[in-house]
Image 1 (cartoon, rainbow, N blue to C red):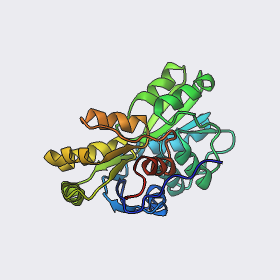
Image 2 (cartoon, rainbow, N blue to C red):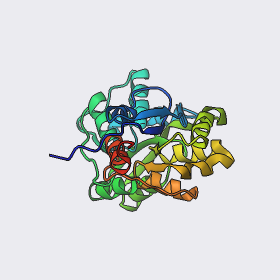
Image 3 (cartoon, rainbow, N blue to C red):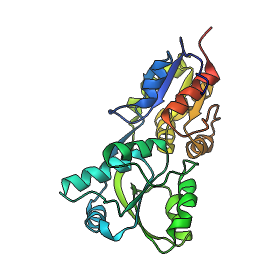
Length: 261
């Protein structure tokens, strides 16, 4: 039985996630007693064109694997399948998910994935799938302009990869991040939690010269890819959980901060 993390009573944690929807990170932080400061950093929009995704979805039977690198990709792909009145992937098509959050969304909306890597990154997913990928047709629905590690790793393993955009990630406007900047300037933030590289870059860009204020608090990154984005922006990562999930991130923040004394 795992040890329960410390409480976060009296602590204020900014959560830089997308707008709307359920937020398990914020829910877990509140469960531990933290005051959550919502800081919308990104929004999700349809791809510039549906044509590539639509063509791939109409040919789903040709693919032996569908690989999802985010819960958003799961939602956008399955929503589009429904909009086109197409059948969902059958049991003959195997599913892979980058981590537990994505696996959970697949289980909710379709069925549990056949493969989830131990390391919840694009590189980890490609490495875990590599023994099964050679000569196989693999569909990767992903963010427009997404990182190359997953697709490149699968191609290097001999997979016949087809990567298609299923959504776009849009940065927040500076005005939407201004309240976070004000709270940082006032010393009213104990930690800022980032769940994606795009959220890091969006917040830093929106804060501009005030991005240096992030050094006044503990910066928490959900996984190594997000942590690398923080460091690329010249900032220091204080918290990274052992598992790339919302609950693990909240618990790691609690272990780092504890309650306010």
